[in-house]
Image (cartoon, rainbow, N blue to C red; front, side, top):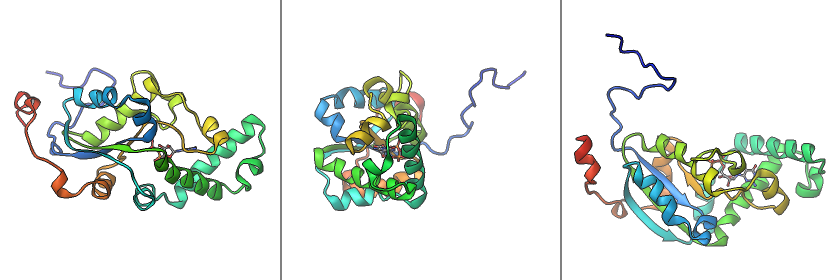
Amino acid sequence: MNKQNSGNTKPAKFINTNLKQRTLILLKPDAVKRGITGEIIDRFEQTGLKIVGAKLIKADRGVAQKHYKKDAAWHKKVGEYNLKDCEDLDVDPMEIFGTTDPTEIGSQVNEWLFSMFDEGPVFAFVFEGPNAVKKVRTLVGSTYPDAAPPGTIRGDYGLDSAVMSMQKKRALLNLIHASGTVEEAQEEISIWFSSEELLDYRRADEDVYHY
Ligand code: GDP
């Protein structure tokens, strides 16, 4: 019998050894202030992923700096992206950033990210389950809500763009942070939660799937 996958999507690995993968989700101040946290959490819960930690927290600058400690490569990438937007809009980057150096521009955007946490509390979660990191990132969608397709959370609930955030000199309002890799998840979870705050229990789905 032909066991090849007939669809276009890549099949999941047959033996999944990552059943207890954990990921950090932050519902950012814009999501909390808009009162849509329940709807967003619903989307993650509906997949079968399990909440193992949750808290509403006003992050101080120290936590913000640990969480969004971006490297020079990120600064350069984001700076170049913003410079391209300036060019497309025929806006002088000197007027907004006072520089044309992409790394310096990215570093300013990084500062805007720290300030985002001054705007209000975040609702922090740890979700657990098979392939939790990738599953959550797929649901969340593109960093830029104006480019995120319908069906993704940023696409369904957001409309901000790099251009809007640049003009207002603030972080992009894209509702959610979700860990990008398993290693990043481990590091980020330890910034926001102590091990005592992460609870072990069984969800009904685990009995259905026998894991
Ligand atoms: P994410 O993993 O999708 O959140 O994307 P990144 O880790 O690359 O960026 C972290 C956060 O920085 C994003 O969620 C945005 O809030 C913000 N951000 C990223 N790119 C830009 C940008 O070009 N302009 C502004 N203002 N904020 C940005």
